Amino acid sequence: MAGRYGSPARRAGLPDLGWATLVRAPIRMEPGDIFVALSDGVVDAERTGGERFGTARVIELVTRHCRSSAAELTAALRDAVADFTGAARAEDDRTGLVVKPR
Image (tube, rainbow, N blue to C red; front, top):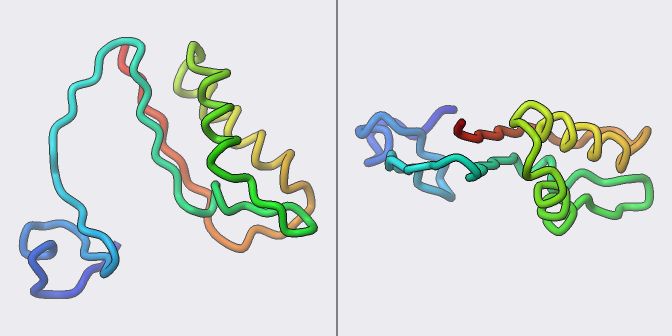
């Protein structure tokens, strides 16, 4: 990611996205916790006709697969979006990160 040279975020070694500020902050995760980060291309993925995948489907899927491994949850998200969109062309990246401590 590239940011504006000289911005406070860039001076701190973080990308400056213009619309958001990223900060470094430790988080404590324990077994049973799930961290899911998705690009807007996942939530905004559309099927033919314009219906969006949406946040509600993401939450339902994560809830349904909360006992799965991070790899299994990632695969379930990927497959659900692919099944939902079918042959519709992707208009954006579809990037996700799932972290589950052991």
